[in-house]
Image (spheres, one colour):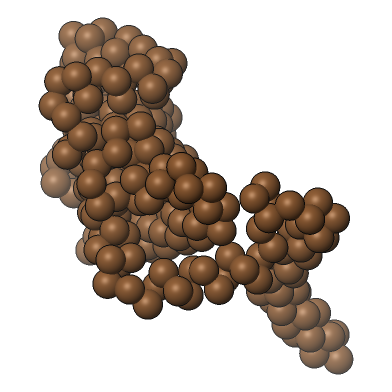
Length: 265
């Protein structure tokens, strides 16, 4: 009887966890609707229903999907390149004091510099074609570098000493010891980095106005006072960022499970 009750409680808890995000979204959409009705100024705040209608209208055009792909390809590529470079630099900094002394202050400087400064410099140096890629890369790389380097420093010293005593080769030690220790820090960095890549990348597009980008569409919506378009494109960015974050976490989750199998061989 106790086990049956515990199973029922577990099922209720699972249903609640599944329903909680939906209920939260419904609550905030309701607040949005109430605020739009009370304000009654569509140029300032459009009701959610009209935003959905406009989003469906946009989604039925080929130009919409071309615009989405334009920004998606550049921002995701910037995030991916930043992740690879950040991990490699952290690995080098962990083994070389020279690399650590050179790269760590640079990463700190980039993190603390306003993104608009980099946007202006990139526009001066290379134009708007690669703007979203470069800005996403520059904003994410220091985050990944710092998190991964911290994870490397936090490895279990006892396990490393055991591996050294028993002469475990590097190709077996890395997946068995290093990756499980560092991966949670990489996951945390990617959680922050995905959102930061989209925020900075879209902001760069709004300023640089590369042709056929989401940022250009947002700027045009602002010029023509099309508030519904502003909200619609904003929802698109939120959905893309959420989807990319989930995909990255799934991939890293699979990587997190695979080292245990490698180490058990």
